[in-house]
Length: 388
Image (cartoon, rainbow, N blue to C red; front, top):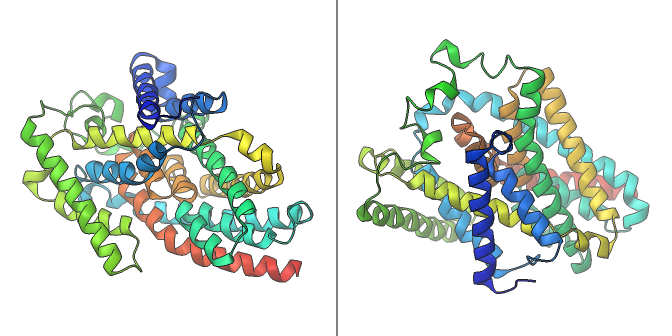
């Protein structure tokens, strides 16, 4: 097994390179996306023993790396272009939160005999993490004083389910578009040609910028991007420490979006492309951390708990969402904002090119940090009362 942090980073870099090249060359992999292919390859390498389940490389890419990727991509975002997707995204996110609460409650009642006295704690933690991401899982675990054994088992289950659900959300628009080809082409012709035909004619769109800098990058461009992105991260960390009630990622998003509206900064090439690369590394990291043996070691009941919660979440958000005629792309990003948080929602939007839904997805993901904790406490209290 490879354990050297630099060697682990090298393997992840190769995984992303292979995934991107496959996406470029073959229609099948283009449909799956480099993000999904990277997750699957890294998951295979991890579960056959080539990559470790834990590494300082993963810690870096899941914290500093993904924050830098978020900052670089947001530097290319025009706020005015994404306002139209807001209401639908909010409705989809609400459906997802309700589905999560129903799923964790049902799983708790069914699996309580197998899990034992900490069932109510898991119900709260899984409700929190599948409403707004892993930040809530840790916060609620500390609040409930969950035992280290149960906490570790739940983390392992959560990591696997988050990676699997990212794969599901990446595939969902493709699957539904095959059944209903009309929804995706229908909206664009009202104002412009179909998105696919626009790609060569609009080299300056954010979707293309994720894969191409648009024009050659000068050393001064790279220096400017590094200064702005790292400076924004530092400012966000300072504000987060000063006002801890607001999460640091919220400060980072706000600062970068304000700076990104400056015309001179908006013209700097390469930011979205470099940010997209970091997000692809982050997603490959999620796949590498999905070690199935960790679940088997502590028993399958905790994994069934996570699986049941996410399955009910998916049934509610996609079932009712499609019934209410919410666009499947919006549903997929909102669902990922629920399950994986804002970074995963952004990664999904970037991987699929749904750039008008990028900021709304990040916005509801950030909202999930607060909503998830409240909902997690409510579900945990309810289950504790029912089970005694």
